[in-house]
Structure formats: structure tokens, C-alpha cells
Image (cartoon, helix red, strand yellow):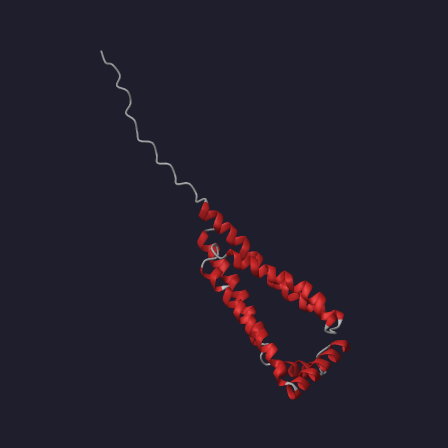
Length: 184
């Protein structure tokens, strides 16, 4: 693969990852509207939703509505969550411009994806979330790390190509004149 093709592939996956972060961030702002929409959707006859999910989302809706009505300042926490996603997305601008020099950002992002797992395993039970919600939260880290692993592989290959460029072809030897034969 040419370095230019590798760089295009790196940028494609980074843009994909950045879009995912931005969407995760901006969807944290209208939390009440989204929870109401999902709760309403789960009560539609054509949606085959497990009863436990319908009940859990109903409880979440009631909690978010109560907090919004009685303690609206709590939503400021999800505003900061949204902001954090947007700021993290901005950190990937460096690798987008120069992936080799900013490989550390890719490694940091991968570490963040892995860190989702212990957070979900510890915080979800402490906060009273049902056990089946934990894999949903963990999936964000698992799915998030996939594009970063692809970017890392291509970035390392690009770095190796930059460090050890292909040797230049050797010039063809100059023609030598044939030894003159003695004529008698």
C-alpha cells in the first residue's frame, strides 16, 4: 500500500471516530427529549422490546423528568459530559494532520476505550443499573477501539516507511569499452 493510500485510510477512520465522539457528545445535551422519545418508542406495538427494558427506560424517564423539574442543575453534569466528548474529539485533530507524530493520541484514545470496561463494571452496579445494561456501556469502548486499532496499524506502517524508505535503484554500470585486440 502506498503511503498516500495509507494516509487516506488513517484519515477516513479518524474522521469516523471523531464523528462518533461528536454524536455521542451532542446527544447528551437533549437528554430529557431523547429519553421521552425512546420511552414512547418502546411502548409502540410494532417495537418488540423486552419488558425489563421498557420498565428500566420508564424508570429512567421518570428520574430525568423529576430531576429536570425539581433539580435542573443536575443536567449541568450531562452538559459537561457532552462537552468532554467534544473536547476529546478535538484531540484527534493532531493525528488527523500528522498521524505519525501524534501516535500518542491514538494510544491515549485506545487506553480510554479500555478504561470504559472497569468504569462500567464498577459504576453501573453502584448506581443501580441492571446487569444487562453493563454490556451496552462496555460496547462503546469495544466498538470505539476498533477504528483506533486500524489507525494504529496503518500509522506504524507509515512510520516504518518514513524511517526506512525503499533504497534508490542503483544506476546501471557505465558501458566499458572492449579491450582492443592486437592486429598483426
